[in-house]
Length: 263
Image: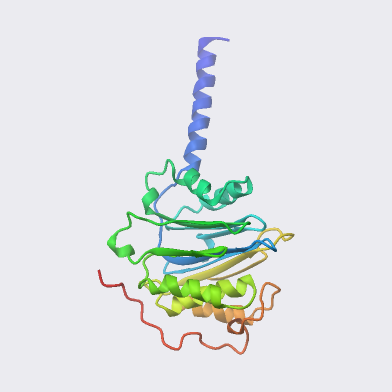
């Protein structure tokens, strides 16, 4: 084989390697300030995620779910193509913290990412955006039994606390509990910039893709509108939670206007 041909093969191989590597790296910066929850039921393999934000159509770019595998959210400086990749790594047997190491190890903007993940065994992990700017405060997260909640650009820490309580205190299906957590966070203040979009995704073994999904892509009051649609929907993913049934009732007796917390 001539040196010219060997050189051409080497360059072609190098270009292919570089293209594959580049495909795994984040592209342009997209800031998805938001609050979200991921959760799994290890006994059934059902998993889900719910999210709300001032970012349009947030339910279609932040949460990712796969039946029998787990749920994942990528937010703040979000990377949508990490969604399926994270679930692939879980399916290969990696623990949640190993998935984060894989995603963040060579990422120059790692400290601008906020990630939440739960696997089919109920193991969870969270990565907060420690280099987030002042406009992204408040940010934080909480984990509990088989779930994690995380958020940034919030009105305050009460949003995170309310979401955890809403999930743990609600009797119903996994979808019911996810919705209850999202409502609790919204009623506590939510995203301090406004209430534009929300969504929920749930996956169940034996069903390809999403078993249940519902979105509000643009609204003046997205989480409440999502709950109204949820109450109007008949689906086996729903349980007996009163908040998700008709006749619809506004879930927040008193709700603060979106406002950034004091520095």
